[in-house]
Image (cartoon, rainbow, N blue to C red):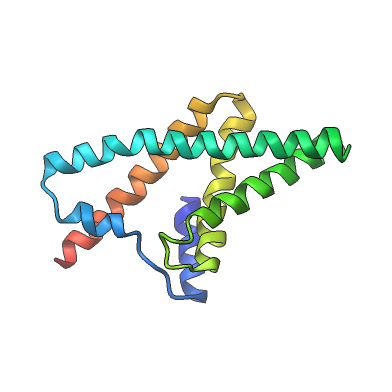
Length: 147
């Protein structure tokens, strides 16, 4: 929901770039679509692992080295992890900085919440899988309708 709202707002500000996976998935049969969606799970776990390790490193630096209060360090570390996560998506979205920060970054903040609440990577991975599967299913359906 949050990703859709952020996408809607961002699309009013800049031209948005569709994820090329939507087009790829739309041109496949049902069986291949299922396999494609299942193959996303390890990648999304990897994205969670990358982001959480970055979050923890930034949190350790801010709280132990810089010695800022823990809550402030969590916010700062979340911001660092979010901006890096948004930046690694720039090639996918044609270098569109606004799209990556506003849409991918907003989604990243929301996807960090399950980890921050539970300290469990599987909680954030599950949320990430549900988010991306939903968005790709909608995007694929829209692309397939145009074919």
